[in-house]
Length: 324
Ligand code: F6P
Image (cartoon, rainbow, N blue to C red; front, side, top):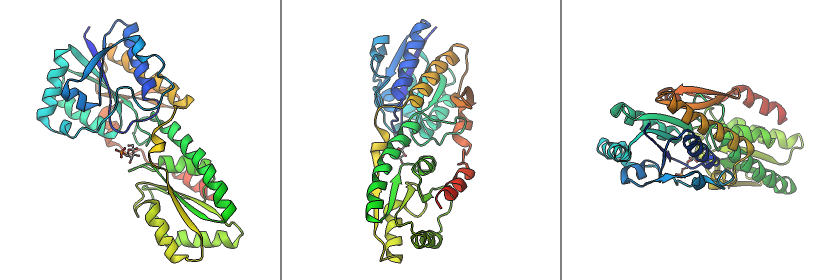
């Protein structure tokens, strides 16, 4: 029985700590040693790791961020640094890795695994974007959405008091999940996401039609990765076309990445962490632990990064019906 390494990589996400806790405690319960690796692949290259005890993960289930810290390592893209990372693992007798992160993290893991098949690799989906195939929820998505919902409720108060059109930008570089889910939960009038084409003429017409039908304020949720360039850009274009309307924008930014994880994120993260270690023990390799229809599933890592999850277009349609 050799040792397990664990790291968090890419954008942090609330619930990552709950996953770390679950991995460490499940491993120790089963007689395995766990090494925490700081700052993702960066720490792996720098040999920055420490042996973790059950008490190292006390009192963290409720905390946002990641106690192991995170980074987006450019060096890990190069073979020579992956080689150094591998040597560092061997020095500590680590032969399995639990990687908590998103798309970029898992792409790196696939490269690494192809070169060094002796290291068992298990992924846990941790990103607020929810853009990984093979799981209904990624860790952090639920908390991020709740943060947005609370913020937009407040914006709605002032928007309706002043009869204003608000463009609110939420995170999601390549995916519109946060925008879609929060747009529905906030009763938004429009949702603009990277998965659909934004038609500016329709957008302007809709705003005017709503005004005529006595809806004087609107909330328009814009995903950061929306093709026309986000809330600032779109609000400027609309302002030019509708100079008589009061138009404002808010970019919510990194507040979406912090905060205490919700029940769903703590529960999902705990289940994924626990099952990641169980997977290691039965010899699973190069898989991601996901949750679909409330059940634990195991998806080949390559499939999780290469397949397109796509958003549910019915939800988008529903949002427009409910916003009349
Ligand atoms: O991947 C998660 C995410 O929060 C994206 O939604 C966002 O585009 C990106 O990270 C921001 O990254 P950074 O914190 O490095 O600016």
